[in-house]
Amino acid sequence: MKKIILDDMEYILVKEYKNGFDFSELNKRYTEYFKEYDYILGDWAYNKLRLKGFCNKDNKIYNEINDYEKIDNYIKNNCAYDCKYFVIKKI
Image (tube, rainbow, N blue to C red):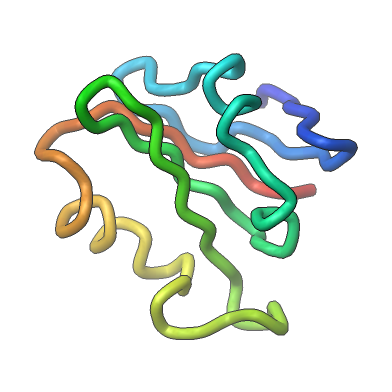
C-alpha cells in the first residue's frame, strides 16, 4: 500500500479507481479541516479534485453524513458517473 504524508499526518491509499490519485493536487486541496477524519475521498469533476471526509463509528465527529460504511452510496449519488477517484485512510 502506498504511504502518503500530508501536513505531518500519515495516510495509506486504500482504493483508487481509474488512476484517480494525484498527490500534487491532493496536497494543494488538503487543509487542516480533514485531520479529524479517518478517510478522505478524492473525486474528480470537471477536471477538478473534490475532497470529502468520512469517519468510522467510533470517531467523535461521526454522523450519518460522514459514515465510511456509506462511501459507496456517496460515490454513486454525489459524484459524476464513472468518475475517477481515490480513498486514503489515516494511520
